[in-house]
Image 1 (cartoon, rainbow, N blue to C red):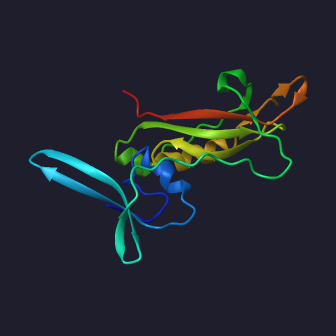
Image 2 (tube, rainbow, N blue to C red):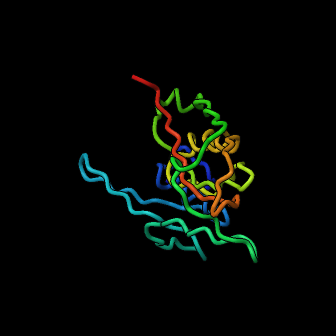
Image 3 (cartoon, rainbow, N blue to C red):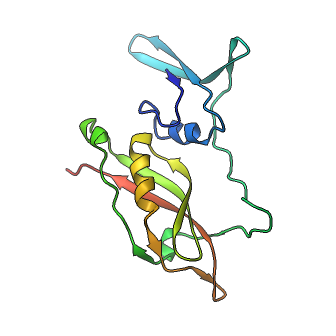
Length: 165
């Protein structure tokens, strides 16, 4: 298996956030071993200088503070914020045809004016995450206040895709 694009339908919910976080779209490969009915995969390899190099299991980098002089957003639970407007994501047709369900968790900044900015996908499949991101970017919150002053807040927003019973 080879991942060349950030959004690959073959990537599972832990691999997709890693593919998105790459600075460049260098292809990543996986070696799959089979013995009888059992499978074992060895992740990840990159093709560098004419040879495959083992990278190992990957973890997303922490997101650095963006900009000099900016204050870091205060972390809060989603339940502690007051949503004014929540937009439900459309269920992607391809995901529906594939009977894919699951949760997408978005690391999100709620700005002091109540608008949202997606920092990164923490969990989820690409095919579902794209729809979740577009929906959550339209959400609106009452500005969070610390000591009476509106402030930027970082929170995790889960979006569940379920086809029902």
